[in-house]
Length: 284
Image (tube, rainbow, N blue to C red; front, side):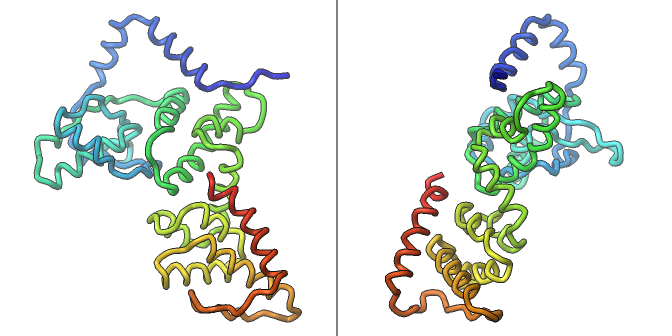
């Protein structure tokens, strides 16, 4: 049986190897490539989906940027640099500039091309950050290609999803939910997730419904300014009921909060079974 791949062990061995190199050579490399760049000349990476960290902002205001940003020069934009690592530091400095604190305009940066190992180390270093559901989902989706590259480069056994799971610190089951939600949820509800207007576990359940029923969920969210598992259970009940009626095509949605009449014993049993189904997702 193949030995289980351990990313933490790989990174530990990498760190030890780097530590064995001469400090002088490392310092010379850093000094040669260290430059001060106007924060306005730093271009946000498309992979940046984190929010501003207020604690980091306060730290920079007090002690400055202690760790340089990692950047690379953009070939199609003269004098501009793409941020590879340090997105939150860049965002924090921009916030400080908005407050008129111009002394933070120039930020220390290191010009360096990131290796695959660098990318892995960065992702794993961010695993325990406080993130929104949208950020967690995006991180998983954006890291999938990296997991495939890592599997191919190191000739790792097993599934790509298992490697991705260890990279981002999320179960394989949850990774599957992220993928299904991203692929199946209508754009308006994806935007609601991005704006943190509804929790992921609720929107995952909505993503299992046909588009017309997802739009009914969107209406509920707009009317009530929230969307709950109970709302989704009711939509699923209505959707199932209409599927069982031959020739039923038109949707007649009840207004949120409107009474649906007394439930039969069979309906009560169905609701109890659905409650068990939702417990798994709500406890994640």
